[in-house]
Length: 119
Image (cartoon, rainbow, N blue to C red; front, top):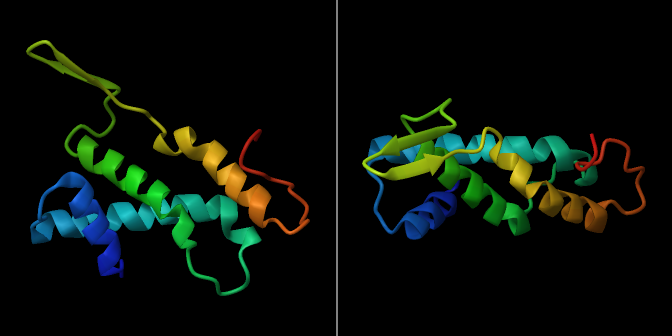
C-alpha cells in the first residue's frame, strides 16, 4: 500500500483534497512510478532497502503527469477552443539524467553495466 505521505504530497501539489476514487488512482500511479524507477536503481540498493526518499520528487512528477492525462491516455495531443495540450509518450524519459545521477552517486564502484543513460 502507498504511504499516506505520498498521497498528501500529491494533494498539496494539486491544491485539492482527493476523493476516494482519485486517491485510489493516484496510489496506483505512485506505485507504478516507483516500480519504473526501481527497474533502473534496484541493483544499486542494499538488499531489502526501501525506495529512496530522495527520489520522491520524480515519483511526484510522474504521478502528476499520469493524473493529468486521465481520460486522455494514448493521445499525443488534444486541442479544444484554441488550447492545445501535448503529452509525452514516455514521461520517465525526461528524468533519466536524474536517475543516472542517483546511480552514479550510489553505485559504490559497482559495474555500471545497464546504466540508465545510453541503452
